[in-house]
Each structure stands twice: as C-alpha cells, then as structure tokens.
Image (cartoon, rainbow, N blue to C red; front, side, top):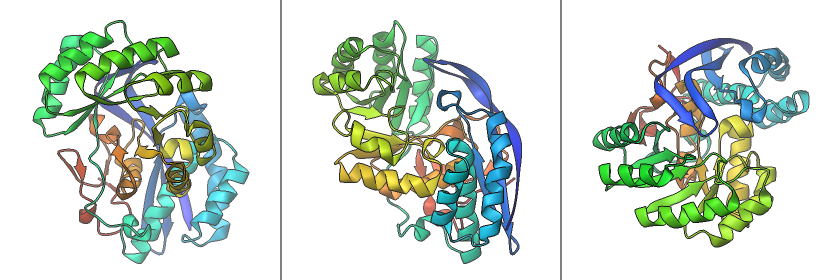
Amino acid sequence: MKGQFETVELPLSVPFTIARGTTTVTENVVVKLEHDGAVGYGAAAPAARYGETTGTVEAVLPELLEVVEPVGDVHARREIADRMRSAVRDNPAARAAVDVALWDLAGKLLDEPVYRLLGLSAGTGPPTSYTVGIAETATMRRRAREAAAAGYPVLKLKLGTDRDRRIVEAVRAAAPDVRLRVDANEAWTPKQAVARCETLAEYDVEFVEQPVPAEDRAGLRYVHERSPLPIAADESCRTAADVPEIADRCDVANLKLMKTGGITPAVELIHAARAHDLEVMCGCMLETNAAIAGAAHLLPLLDHADLDGSLLLETDPYDGVPVREGRFDLGAVEAGTGAESR
C-alpha cells in the first residue's frame, strides 16, 4: 500500500465570508493510496482555527503515510487510526485525509460503496444545507433566492454582523419556504446570543449554530438554557471526548471530518452523541469532493447535514457523490466513496 499527496488550489465561485474573515481561494491537500491496482482518495482542508495550515499538513503527512504502509491491510482502519493518533497527536485534517483515502480504497478493493461497509442503506439521510456567506444584505437575499430556486430545501446563513436581523428578514422574504439555519461562528456574547435567538425565532429559524466562543462553556450553557431555539455546537465539539461536556449545553452536535480526524473517529462521535440524546449534524470546511464524498456516506446516521463545501467551489479537480437539489445520491456510488480524479 503506497501513498502520495499533492496540494491543490481551489478558487471559490464567490467570496466566502464568516464572522472571522473572508476566503476567495482555498487549498486542500489530496492523499492518494494505491494497492492492487486500486486508488483511494482523501483530502485535508486545514483550518487555522484548529491550528492547522497547508504547511503543517504537508509536514506531517509523510509520517502518517509511514504509519499506513507497514500495517499493509487497508481493512485495519481502526488500528491505523489509533497508530496515526499516536504518531501525530493533533493535525486532525491531515489524519482525515489518510482515513478517508483508506475507506475509499477499501470500498474499491471490495467493490462496495462505503455506506455498505458501514452497514448503512442508500436513500436515507437528510439533505445538505446550502450556505450563504456574509455579504451586503441585498447580495445575501439574491443568493438565497437563487439557491432556493435551484431546489435547495435548506439554507444556512452566516451571521455575526450589526445587521443580523435585517439579513434574516430579507432572506426569509426571498425564500419563504426553505428551512433556515444560522451560524454565528462564535461571534456573539451570551447575552447577545439570547437576544438574537429571540429575534430569529420570529423568522422560523430551525436552529442556531455556535453562538458564543467555544472556550466559553458557561456561556454556551447560558444560551442553551434561555434560547427559544435549539443550539448546535460546532467549534465546541471536535471529537467524541467533547460530547459529555457539551451534552447539557446544546441540542445538536456538529461533527466535521476535519475536526475528528476522519470517518473512523467520526462514527465514534456519532455514537457518543446518540448516547447523550443529542441530534447529530455533519458539516464541512471548503473542501474538494475527495473529502466531501467520504463525509456523504455518513448521511444515513445523521439528523442534519451541511456538506456543501464542494458546491461553493468554482472548479474541483475531483468528482464525488452526485448531488441534486441538496440530496446526495449514494445509490449512484458503485465502490468506495465515489471520489475520482477528473
């Protein structure tokens, strides 16, 4: 089993702004694992918020690939995940790239899609939301109208401005029939968050994601206890070990492969969240299909999905699971994750 990697530059279709900043071009590090004529793909989408950059991923991937090759068994994914975590303690996006590539390769060698390796069925699971980043209010209204017209049944709005109410009001008027979620990306204080949630409830918002800084655990509890809307934890929820801490401070645990370290530990987080009576969502970074395709196979285990990272790109060198009107067609995947180089 031989591995290699390359960094790809991915321009976005429009600038993507959240409370922490704006992105116009993102970089992913794509991993390729080869064995017995098959190629498995995975990718890292590092986030500075979690202490990773393209440079740190490139620096640790040789060590991670050295862990994989001696094991020699693509199906020993639990063992490999544990060895990777021992070799490189942090760097979850780098580990995710290798883990997703392993699942893809295993599926291709067995001629089975990953959802079947997980014991799941195609045709189940929620649609993905489509994210509208922060922009001028009129621009956000137009983008929301266009996404709704394209058939996306769920929209997610990035907030954290001094005109949050105007944005939600404008978007709700432009797309009255969609399910609407908002994500503050840690931008509010606890008292601001409660006031914002009371306002957002007037516009039939489904839930509010990460209203306060992740480090403010007491603040998250304060909001959860007083908000009329459900609260989802994103930056506060990185791995399964975080679930017991957030279980009484939110309603939804939002996992990302780039936080957990791949599909293998993501399944652990899902089971931990279920054990604590939390709903589960899988989100993403700005990711190529080489990564998103792996996350899509978790859909039958989820209540909510935010897997639009590749949909926000202008170009993507990889194909993935087909998406139509927000729904991933897992049944169209013949083997592996569905990721292939174009």
